[in-house]
Length: 324
Image 1: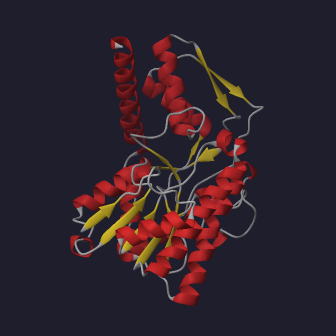
Image 2: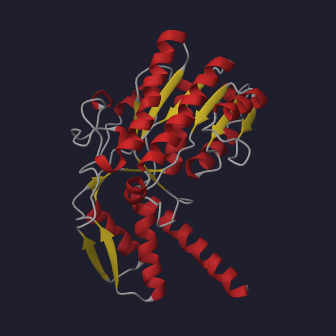
């Protein structure tokens, strides 16, 4: 439960507030009675440019900045655009933290990524293992760019007393996810493959990798709630995992999504494509201890809601295309 008395006197900038996670964060802030919520749009502010970040903070005068904006994608997108993923994510976060400090922002909430963890981190991942190796190669530039925001946050807290915290969400999913096959993550990519195959009468789908890798997933609304609770209650330098505490092999995930979507065809594994990090599962005890966050959404129920939303949106697009 969020604290309305905390939010009613505070103005909040939510970068990426029109995006997947951001829409849920903005919704919770609104229900929590935030004094003012500012969602900068890319057409008005290029957050990679220091001058635009200065302009945003001068015009909005926020008490809190929640930095969700990011250039993200699945394994394919990370392999194709490692330079862009590194530069865009690092420059946005670096300018926002520096200018927030200069502008007298009360608190900065930096959102990292599970991709920042070393490739062979012992499972479940603990925050203290974050620096014990190099990230998985296919998304290392993105993961390292985000991890530099932790370094900056801690350095600024040490030198300037600036209250910047750093959260590490695991892979997210839920209604409103990105289903573009060129940049989507594993769950929306698999849902699209299965739903489209059923609709188009196809008898097989092709899935990247071997299926042996495992992942943990957090429902997007749970993640948004965790971010809000951390903004309210956490003010320490150490990073904090946000996860559900579950782990599932990709092979089992494909089987589950096939069942939920009604796809009964053949699953072809393209082992020439990478699996990515071998395992991902977080130790989530610190988030509960520090600010009372625990995931609430059952994984299968969350998948059903995500599938239903995609099918509804797909049907609406089809109907619009027919009318046109």
